[in-house]
Length: 109
Image (cartoon, rainbow, N blue to C red; front, side):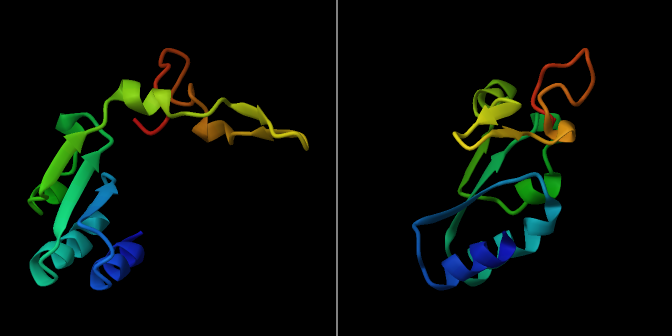
């Protein structure tokens, strides 16, 4: 993802370069886009505010929004999809209840 972010920013492909991540490995690319290339950046944090990466927040993105658990859940595909050629199964560790039987939140929590 970092290479696409940087490549697009080098080519001046957008007005704002937004990532949806909690991965602090993107701190340097985010800083390069904003500080070195003088482009606007955005961060969509897919975690609760207390679990969001402080390092990413410290890149001072122009836009910073939290993605709620409800919004993430609404974007999840079903565990099994019939695509007309057969069934496609979501890997078990990615299933909606993979965090345990008491939780029904998306598995990326």
